[in-house]
Length: 319
Ligand SMILES: [Zn+2]
Ligand SMILES: [Zn+2]
Image 1 (cartoon, rainbow, N blue to C red):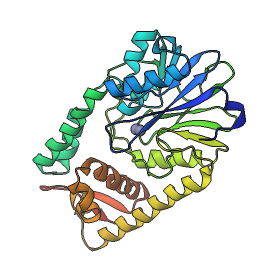
Image 2 (tube, rainbow, N blue to C red; image 1 turned 135 degrees about the vertical axis):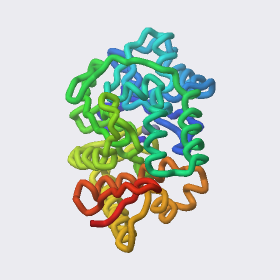
Image 3 (cartoon, rainbow, N blue to C red; image 1 turned 60 degrees about the horizontal axis):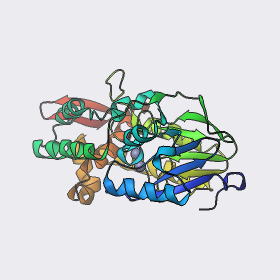
């Protein structure tokens, strides 16, 4: 990936494989006055070895790290941060709205309540809770030092502002150099449309309207210039084009859901089966529910869709 010229001699993308459907993750090494890692891969032997070997190419070991900056608390991005910090004494930074994710608490009860309120079949609920549990092996809990929106971090020559860009995760942040270089985490990916996952605010326990947050974050991203270094896939220079593509795709799906609700009210599960039967078959129900729920939240906010509580769980109807 061809970086902007000012960054070429001290910003290095490090590719690390993951056991997750998304594929490899990119961590970014800043070989500046400080040695900084932006995201760091999941916690597992192979990921550790890959990172060590990348660092070796630069004459470094994990002990040399000064700081670790985390975009969000998903295992592919932060999983081995605690191990690295333990080895190196590096200071770790992340956003406080990610503290439940960083602590390795999966909000199991909140999810269970949510799924049951929507009358999802118990076997599928168990399957999704198992999937959440499965992720735990790939991350060590950590409590980073907190950085908030608009605060600054510096590696020396490079200073970045923290931009809270919620949606994919409640405390997802982008590191913005202000010079046309953005470390984007999972906010904007080229090939894949990132999911605004079902998540809960760690302070209130309320479910976030994550698609609406995500769209707001994308609209902020659409105003940025330069290059995004994402957590997955190649660097993105056509920021506006990629952002608009995702936003338009949301709008199409939103219209589709509105149409599906024209005839009669439907449950979250009915809508999910109707639109993404194959993905559900492949075990991606949680992603599907997250996606559909986003459009239902959107309709509720616009006053075009409302929830109806029935003895068979929550239904959604067109107003
Ligand atoms: Zn993520
Ligand atoms: Zn990711």
